[in-house]
Structure formats: C-alpha cells, structure tokens
Image 1 (cartoon, rainbow, N blue to C red):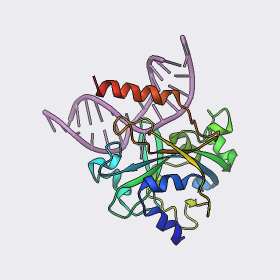
Image 2 (cartoon, helix red, strand yellow; image 1 turned 45 degrees about the vertical axis):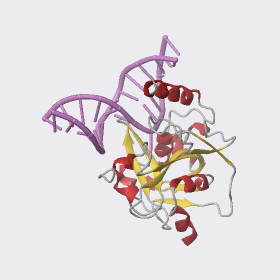
Image 3 (cartoon, rainbow, N blue to C red; image 1 turned 30 degrees about the horizontal axis):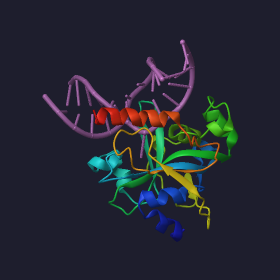
Length: 210
DNA sequence: AGGACGATTAACT
DNA sequence: GTTAATCGTCCTC
C-alpha cells in the first residue's frame, strides 16, 4: 500500500501510463464492477490550460488539490459524469482522467447500467461511459481509492509495466498538442484511431491560427 | 443575475 | 458527418 501511495504522489504525466492495466473496483449500489484501465489522460494544474485546475482552487476542483489516491468526479455537458484519479502531493493539482477500461468483473451490472452498449467492449469505452458502468457520480467524488474496503478501490498490477502509446488529449481546446493521452495498444475498449480527433484538432488550429 | 461553454454520447442522415 | 440533449461551473456585469 505504501508503494502504491508513493507512486501516486507524482505528476499525472508519470502516473498516467502506470495506471494502464490497473484494476478499479466499484461497489456502488451493493454490486461490484471491476474495470481494467486501458486509456487515460493526464491533467496538471498550473501550467496546463486544459485542466479544470488551471485557474486555481474552486469548490469543484478542491479534490484535485487534495491528497493523492482520491477520486475526482465532475459533471459535464449537462448530463455526464467523468472520473479522475488524483495524483501529486497535497496542494498541487494533478489528476488522471479515466478514459476507457475493460470490464473484467460484474459485467451484468455494467450492462444494466449501460443498456445502449451493443458489445461488451463498448461498456467502458469513453470517460462518461466508464464512469456510468462503474456507477460513479457526485456521491463518489473525493472517495479514497487506496483504503482497503473503500466503496471504490484501486489495485495496481505489481511488477507490470505494459507497453503503451501516447498522443494528444481528446475534446479539449487548449494545449491540444501535449501528448498526454496514454493507452494500451490493441485493446478493444480503446479507440486507438479516432477520425473525430483529427478533425476536432484541425478545427481548433483553424480558429486559433487564421 | 445572466450567459457561454464544456476532459461527451447517442442517434440521426 | 451532423446534431440535440442538458445543467453545473465560472466569468462578467
């Protein structure tokens, strides 16, 4: 457990790739769902214009400035929840957005939470989908992931350093060229090639460089 | 007090 | 490839 905590007390850009392959278990609502993390994005605080914490500590971003190993859940687009794992030391904002995962346990509960998913690989493909199939929302914001028996728990795969790929983050309009998205290659739960990404990025460049 | 915009998704054509 | 859905957060007045 100490090793896990020490690992988390680093920048999200370091922790991000190391989270790939780790398993997050949620016992929200009494049923257990576990996900093997396959795609993440790193968000820093000061110096990262794409981060929620860029403009400093607010009620929403308070958890991001708190101790490592806690869950930062936020609401977006008026309908979706997304989940991050807080990194770095207290007072420094840094978090890893969980973008995709493979459901490895509790698949029936995950399916019930995500009826729109036509295949199992789609249950946790996308940050809001992942949060949904784990049952994560406002009530889980700030949850300590490193305490055994917690409602949401993170288990690292010891000794495993999986090869990963990196690229620009998705869905942001600033700092679009930082390659802080990390994913495992050849995973069904990851959309490694996203035609939409390129287009979105091109659009951003067009508006910023007339 | 008001308004713009989002770390997205699903269901269209 | 396009678009509606939908509301919390934060900035501006």
